[in-house]
Length: 415
Image (tube, rainbow, N blue to C red; front, side, top):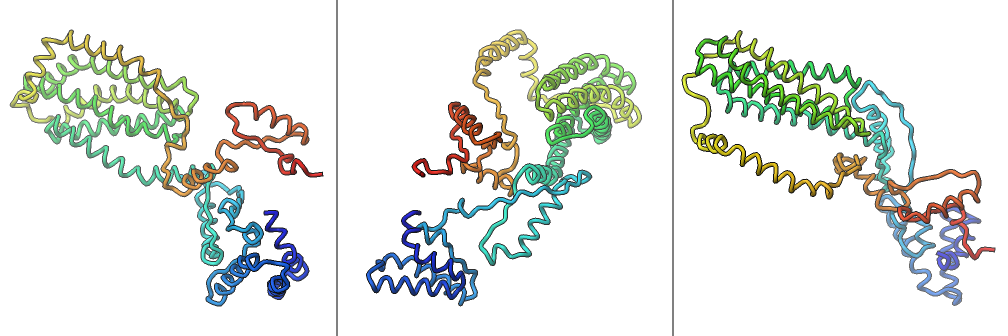
């Protein structure tokens, strides 16, 4: 850079005296004169003349034109990071909308488009930060919610049909599931006030786990209906045989979700709180509402015994060797438990987001530069001496790559 400024000394003085097109032409003319007199080498003028010619050709052709003094003085094209500029905006947020900052980000994007920054100045405007990132999260969630719900519903319907083979029973289970889901959602909102990106996942968890209670009850009902043709007798026998096991399963599942409660991650803690209580609600609706619906709908009796004939040998094997099977499973769990010490937890919530959206892609690109990295911290000090002392103390930490203060902007050999 110093050599470039030295070579461009006459050029810069001329432009400072007359910063116009006339001044540029006069400066270039002086450069040619210097070459003729031997004060400059022809190679020294090659780059500025080439840059000037390219700019003039772009202007004549009607193309966007620019002339970089930094590139001229530095002797090489400017690095993209040198051309990057940051504008910090504090938008007005609409918390009644799913994406509170979307109006602001759309307005910024529209303004950049109206100004034709890309076409006229080859400039690209990209937005990132807390608000655009959060909005893109909700946008992705909203876009994928329909697909996730449809896939979950289709999978549930297929499982229900394979297990129940009765439209009336399937309808009863579906109604019981939806009622339990509505009650769980209301109870969850009562507990936490509002759902977030993690706790909202309880909808999928409730459908996947809650429907299992209905399937277990209904499958047992079909088996009992084959043995007891009278509907109420079959329902009573079903409740007696599956009530206890289902209660144990619901309690165990709820306790499992309650393990999320002690964490400092609010979303995960709330998910455990809502999903845990939701399992109890799913159990209650399965042993109360579901039998009532079956009594009202009165499905036809079962002519054939339940189960798959091909899997009967598996059932017999498990019944005869249940103790060895349980022992083997316990041994596998015990032997695999030490692997938990190598289990790592990803603390970065950014990895939960799509890297394709603009806000995340921009952030990931900025993170590659140490000056704009996500882990860069700005610390205010009372004066330069205090700032230098803080920098020296932090630079000794192994987690700190580098520290910079205003003192680093002053050359060490400067008088």
